[in-house]
Image (tube, rainbow over all chains, first blue to last red; front, side):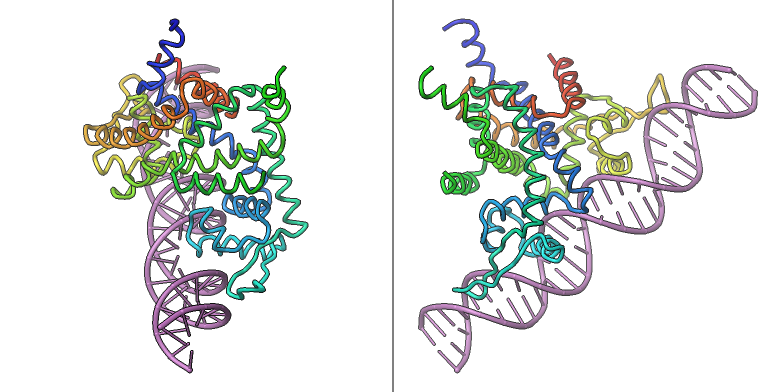
Length: 165
Length: 165
DNA sequence: TTGGAGTGTCAACAAGGCTGACATATCCTA
DNA sequence: TAGGATATGTCAGCCTTGTTGACACTCCAA
């Protein structure tokens, strides 16, 4: 074992290293949301709207309850956001054909356009970071992020991921 | 070039890969804040208090203005939080000796105890993720996070980082 | 057919962002 | 030394986005 791998294996868990990771996570998340936030502000929306739009785009026809369990907020909180998006013609809510209690959610063309604008901005940032760091770093990045999630969230994440492959 | 490195170098920037990274970042951040959030809620504080406590611990004697530029919020917003922490005896504000306009902020023993409780919880989560992913993954994780920050934030982060080494 | 479970809506409240205006104390320079 | 600049604190009011409580509609099984 050479000096580098020795210190790596021993020092990457020091409190100091962990604290740096914590701060990096905090500052990086601010960068991560900065570009969409600017676009959203122009249009009078917030991050909650972004999240709803993202996951409706991700799973068209999803029900309100599905969305709730993914987003981890109360239905009242989500409902307020959805109401705005529906009133503004970005989201369409269709009563379920099989179960009329359910509402299935879809993006309208206008909603899809905003989704594209937001995800383009966020992807540009992510692409720049990925390009700067390289494929090996990205693999590590993804590993650590997955390990950081709550167990039940990770299951949801993996389910979402698998569905899309 | 074998199959693995070929697909890595070509595919790690697809929209699909980037979208997965975006979702991973979102879900991981929720995990990242979950443990401190639980502790804070018991005591009637929020994330804003956590951030203030963290950076006062990080740089004892820091001024209000320093804190403002690190946290990127308005002084009114920070002041509301600081007032609460000072009233509750977690933070002490001392008038500057050189420049009496400045207030230097310190954690009291009570404040330091809460800081420790919060950072222990957050470090445990981070340590678990680091251990699960391994040193090489952690290096990549840090690289991508740094590349994701806004430029001016990255400068601040590097300044903070260097000061502590 | 009725009662409980599931789904969605409305109302009201709190935390924590924001802006704007202004007071105070202090520092520094012309 | 007078006056502008700087650092901080505070009041008022707004917005987003969380929360809980109450309630209506729909479905299904006893």
